[in-house]
Length: 467
Image 1 (cartoon, rainbow, N blue to C red):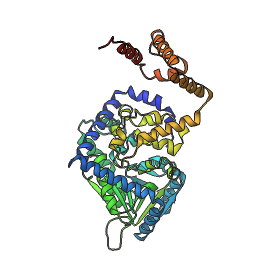
Image 2 (cartoon, rainbow, N blue to C red):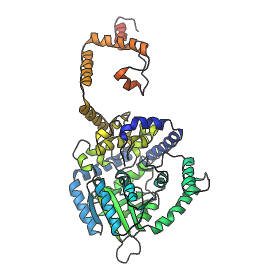
Image 3 (tube, rainbow, N blue to C red):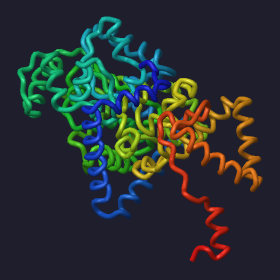
Image 4 (tube, one colour):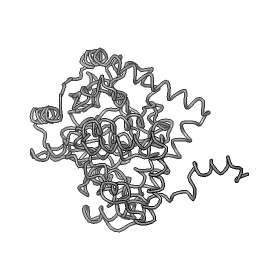
């Protein structure tokens, strides 16, 4: 997927002036935020926090031992009949998939929701090669029909209202007009059924790979995921190398916090553990299952001060809590991942120079860390990325400005003169600062000065004029 993150400001401005998007995103994130709180702390606040810390340790332990855990996972997956492949980047991952499709003479692929396949732009690569690709998750199906990309990690169509979805179905699928959501879902199910029956290959992502048992864990609320992984003769799972965990005990913990923070459920409707292809005597399942472990920039993050970001389990809770995301939606971030986690991952995976506005796309309120099921310190990483930006882009004007600020802060006389000058200047120019200072007031109101400075009030108090 093309990176358009440097246009965050203009894209956000467009989003803010779309009332339908504002209505849909605001309502969707509010509901998800409230459901998460109810599910995570159903027993007690202490129990919910204890689960978070258990999940934190499970992911950090897997990351600390990542090379060894990946080797264990590969050996046990192969012992279970999986075919394991490795891809250093998006191109290699796509080539692996193309080779498998060619080997099995495939022309139609059905997919369950996978953010990693969005990350590597797999659909476009396959379609350019003449493969018919059908997204079968309802949200992904809708945005595929509308030629869009997901705007949320869990709810890809969160930016659309029911009326907009109805219009897409009517335009693209000749559905008769209806405002009944159940009728729309039934219509989509009918349209997808023939693809489930006729597809040559199913493609999925993977929420977890359990090294101890050599298993693939998938979490979903729609039956499409199970159809994609069991009905075709071939199943391909593309998984980021950071998704591997050590054992079933860790899986039980992480699955609990994923579903509670992602959808507000104790358990999703379909929670699958896949242990390989169909075995002798079994009537269901694919003949071949491939797992492609994808790096695509993750190794470059591993071992840095940002390695904690690899703990993300893609629940979307930080998006639902973020006041910036709630106002602009996911597309404004210009790449696959939106919200606070996107503001960190996009610069790390695609290069800071390609996503320089994103570290500033945050109020630093800390809500993202507060709701993260594995306690990732996103505010700290956003500040570190801002520091990296400054370090890379320091120029003479910036240096001169900092020296001037330091001189003013060290001299009471200069400080007082600056305060008086600023107050007088505000009276003259109003809310719009000139020249280089206009970067602040271009998108914000300049706050009014207090009637008196703290220094003035202190002096008056000392003289006994204030009681």
